[in-house]
Amino acid sequence: MIGRPARYVDGLPTPPRTLVMGVVNVTPDSFSDGGLWLEPDKAIAHGRQLVEDGADLLDVGGESTRPGAERPSEEEELRRVIPVVTALAAEGALVSVDTMRANVARQAIDAGARAINDVSGGLADERMLPLVAETGVAYVCMHWRGHSHDMQSRATYANVVEEVVEELAPRIKAAEQAGIDRNKLAIDPGLGYAKTADHNWTILAGLDRLHQLELPVLVAASRKTFLGRLLADQETGDLRPTRDRDDASSATSALAAMAGAWCVRVHAVRPSLDAVRVAARWAAEPHGV
Ligand code: PMM
Image (cartoon, rainbow, N blue to C red; front, side, top):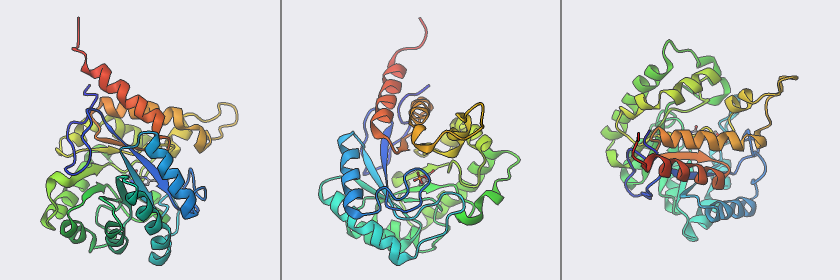
């Protein structure tokens, strides 16, 4: 039990608890909130609300990467993301951009973004790692096995935790070789990305192993299908609807904080912020009597 981050990312906040990243999806098709904030004004207002709720940083994304999703054009992604980043950064919010495209990252950084959250870990666009190195922003490197349209066909592992660690290690090395300062890096096991529900649970239970890579760990479980499956209606088997997964998401945030996660990426900020504060306070007590 740690209850607070084992490590932090240079240039981002360092509260004495796990950070909370609020999700601002400017997409028509994200699995839990697709279409809700597609208009820039709505997305900006939503981001503002998440900051008021206590988000340490906002993750603005214009591409849904839910299983089966088709990619938007780069032009469309830019059209969705840049006005929102510009407005929120101008208001003082700390903005991260969820993109796999170096060109979107570059324009977002020019618009004030201070971190890039790349679900492909630099694999989708070879210009991404050099761009991050050149601009000196923080970088979240996620475990990824390919684009969403067919990623679930790659959800095969003999030992999911070890394979995620083995496949993340070369991505970290590539990031450092491209010139990214190790202190600006965080890693993410990529829950749901080429992973089944059982894989996700195994990874969460194995976060200690991920920490052996000695980098801050981001956990993004919020509203994902594996929670919907856990909480499925016992009679009909219907998955718990996405919007009714926030209590479980907060429970996951508390447990991730207990395991030493650096940051949780969530849709509902306030309950997860409360959860990580509880975890930090709990773990601050000396153990035993
Ligand atoms: N998941 C989603 C989007 N971005 N970024 C990181 N680093 N890790 C994730 O697991 C992740 C992500 C998909 O969730 P959403 O559609 O609710 O944003």
